Amino acid sequence: MPQYWLMKSEPDDCSIDDALAAPQKTVPWTGVRNFQARNFMAKKMQVGDGVLFYHSSCPQPGIVGVARVASEARTDPTQFDPKSPYFDEASKEEHPRWVLVDVQALRKTRLLGLPEMRATPALADMVVLRRGNRLSITPVEPVHWHAIVDEMLA
Image 1 (cartoon, rainbow, N blue to C red):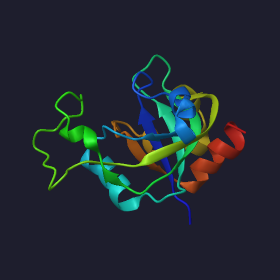
Image 2 (cartoon, rainbow, N blue to C red):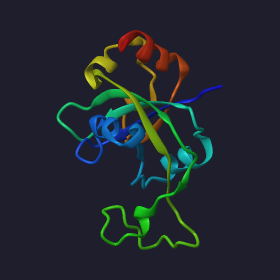
Image 3 (cartoon, rainbow, N blue to C red):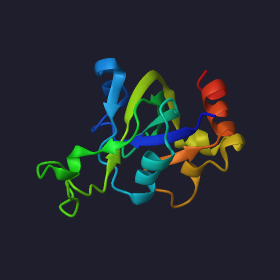
């Protein structure tokens, strides 16, 4: 049974347009430095899972595209690169702390912003809308996925 995820990216780092312009429309989801979000990638995500591509830390945050998980989790090389903003000196190559998955952009959508999401009763209990939630990756219930993809972004 497919699973669904909301994955946040800062558009200055990797936008939906960047992902769509990448070879095979696929980008490595680097830089996740939260253990819970890492565990979603390492232990729960499977190739083919649906992804809501979400722009964060920008003037108009929200869902901007639909994608899919395109690879199994593997070591995130940015943790070993001292020049990377995601460098983690505590992480060792023989015991890496951080992983990534490849995400393949399927299509750009209209912006489904936070105000509209919050105003939609069918999305009221969506994880990303919970007070204090700051995770860059959150699970999406099938009912929320279908309300967004099949109805709001159709």
